[in-house]
Length: 162
Image 1 (spheres, rainbow, N blue to C red):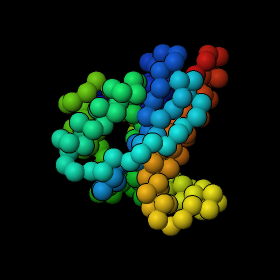
Image 2 (spheres, helix red, strand yellow):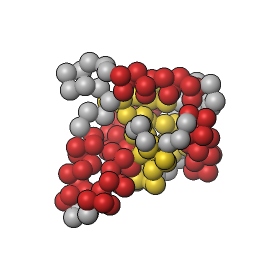
Image 3 (cartoon, rainbow, N blue to C red):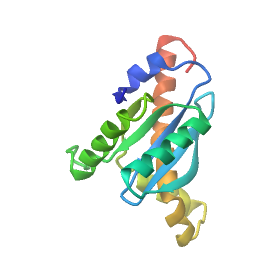
Image 4 (cartoon, rainbow, N blue to C red):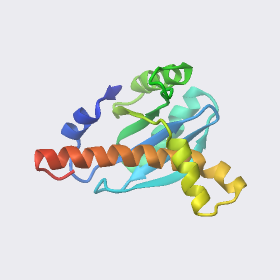
């Protein structure tokens, strides 16, 4: 299925289906999960990246365990809105995942998500070592929460439940 827009996802999701947020890094994949009501994003442990086949297996095992209906993946656009090498790598990852699963992916602009996550962890007085461990999943939570808020807004404009 590869990718959908957030509007297309809103039209296909059923009530009670959870979605996952992903922050794709070169060494780790930050993960967050929504609740079944799709109101809140919660960070989950990061996946350590090895190579694509193993990364995909780990991610799909997680998706199966958690009954993930869709993935929202951060698209690391440059601050000026242009697409750099990391955007190309993220799109390639999603294309490759599309060959392995029917779970749809939604690209979400992640500019400043890591900055926001770092700020939140600092406010919670998390030590530097623990911040390093948690930053990718915290960023995935910010990415997912933005998408959840948009889904809620779309549902409100249609007069339906998210």
